[in-house]
Length: 148
Image 1 (cartoon, rainbow, N blue to C red):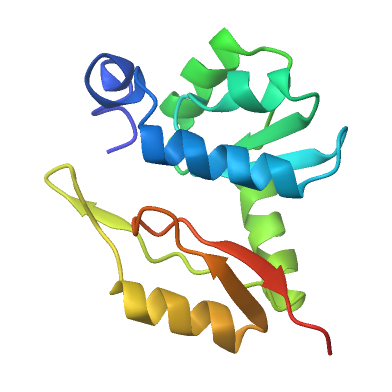
Image 2: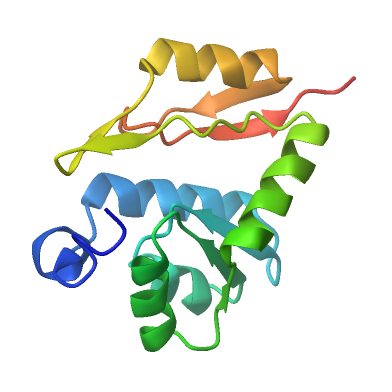
């Protein structure tokens, strides 16, 4: 699957910015201090990076597809790209910190399957996060760590 869609992804899905996603990314940026670093998990080819970079923030991209990362890095060579070993280490560190991380996405014939949204929400809350906004209902959560 790593190379199946990377070559034509931007032509079919990644070349446009969904209005609800843009609104959601802007909401995230409004909550983040100027100059901060943003982690774009499942970044694909980096289609929201121009918006993040233009806001004065830095971005690090991570994706399960090495080919998507290669395309992103070709367009945005100043953005840090995380390799597979770094991704696994970051995943382990995030889990150790209690972040609601799951490796729950998989594909069959190119179609994405995810756990039910209620399950993803429950995992997020169980990990100690308050869901502040669910955006467009496509597994995009703005969360805040609950005080302990």
